[in-house]
Amino acid sequence: MTHTLSGHLLEHLDAHYRGMPPVAAMQVSIAGYDGERLRLHAPLSHNVNDKGCAFGGSLSSLMTLAAWGLVTLHVQSAGMEADVFVADSAVRYLAPLFEDLQAEAHAAPEADWHAFLATLAERGKARTELVARVTLPDGRDAATFRARFVAFRKG
Image (cartoon, rainbow, N blue to C red; front, side, top):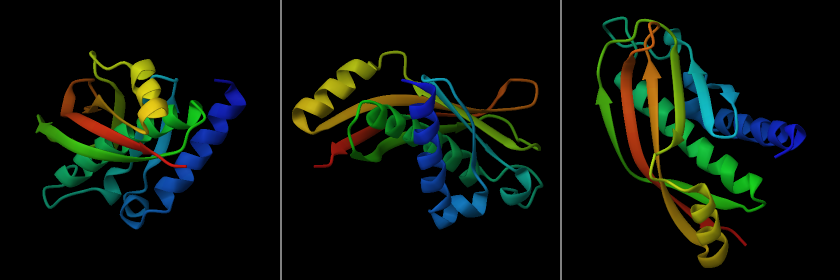
């Protein structure tokens, strides 16, 4: 994927995030994308709970949004349009986070982007698994996430 195409897709994804009121309230921003991993950021000040640390719902949401965004970027970079949904997920909360939220999503080790995209192109629907994490400032995990996503091709 060319840098220009990647930049356009990231701008479109960022606008999509900002267009969803709950996501806009979290002040989610794209922190990075290298073609395999999508990183999102959200300030603690907009995602804080009654204990002064990151709200569990915000941790789960940010990881879901990172994984959803990564699937969406892969579909669009393959020249397709699809509705992408989370089918199921599991979240583990491992430690309180008292800093801004940083989530990173990537394909699960057994996932295959080429097979996912080929199935989507051929059958009009496909599924894949992703993993994500929110880290503490020292690099340890604050929360981890594993989910199946389903895409339904449009048009």
